[in-house]
Amino acid sequence: MILCFLIGLVIGGVLFGIVAWLAMPSMMIVKHQSRYDSIEETCNRLKAAIEANGWSCPTIRDMNQTMAKHGVHMDEQIKIVELCNATYAKEVLLTNPEVSTLMPCAWGVYRATDGKVYISGMNMGLMGKMFGGNIAKIMGGTVSKDETRMLKEVIR
Image 1 (tube, helix red, strand yellow):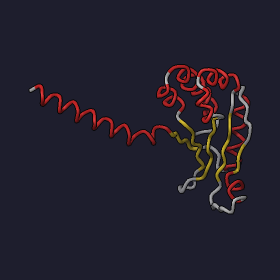
Image 2 (cartoon, helix red, strand yellow):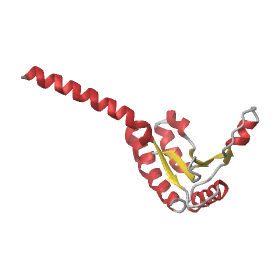
Image 3 (tube, helix red, strand yellow):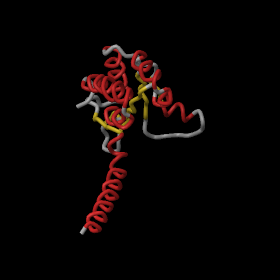
């Protein structure tokens, strides 16, 4: 009886782990449809929303131009909109400098095969919970709330 319970517990744990592992990628990246029909307009509106919420937008990267410099051509336009809040960044970097690789935050803007413009980004709430501690407090809490407020002005 106890052996059956232990075997069931192990099998259940393994199955849970497999399901969690398979679900993780779709949970880590969030995708929202833009309320605008052009990538350019979406990027401009994102920049305005970022700055209106007290953040900075260091750059909007045109990935097509960047890759073209290296001889790589893409038919579909893709841009990356960077956003940064220096105060939040400092709070995280003081305790966890290793997450500097995730800064600045960024959103991808692209047209999908369905013809609609989308904005994608890291799920900061989930990412913060995974890291725990100060990262959960800042990135999973404050940053996630700010990003939600910014996106509300640009997504459907």
